[in-house]
Length: 269
Image (cartoon, rainbow, N blue to C red; front, side):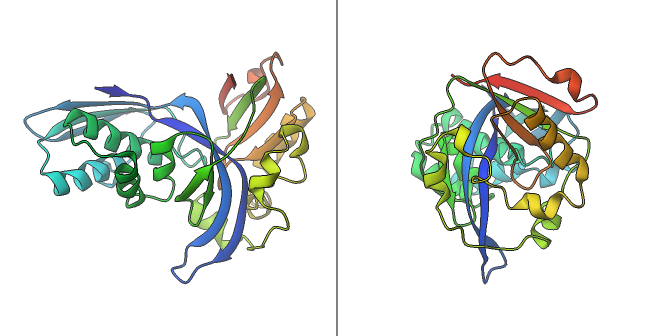
């Protein structure tokens, strides 16, 4: 079985308050991309997990392995052999690891005919990470709480092209949170995104930019360059370090403008 766990970007990200459990309540819109890893899961006589592409470090800490262990403990699953081709940059605010975990749950559910409903898969995904439930739904979603409370969200970007840049640097999530100041927005992000991308600049903001840009000026420079090249809207995704710009479809490729950085673009249908 081969699956394609995809990335996401955050359209806006408000940090509302710090919670007693040391997490933060937030508001954001998750928007899925076509950019994806490749995940292969096959039945086997013994468990195996291997990776290629971008190095992912200690396999025992990988969310794919944790996702398998979670369902294996619940359903006494047979062994599988899993191979992950890692393409989505890490430390980029794109949710690649969360997506890998969610798609592992989806794949195991199908492979072993567990007949888990979408709601049950979401419940298991929430045990693995705050972003994981989104990738079970994998449609534009308004996220609240730690990011696990999801509702439908109307985001119409048809006719636009999304350009994604990830510089060589990565931003540790803990560092981004340590310097952010929670604030209650005067207008709900859910309402703002409905106004259309042309209206987003100055209104739809990622609060992490305030804490990340001073320490990582190269990320700020990418955002400014995207605007200078004609972006209708540009923003850092999640806690960084990737930045995306939304352009009118037909805008020429900017690949040569960002040497040394990961570059991705897709036309939104």
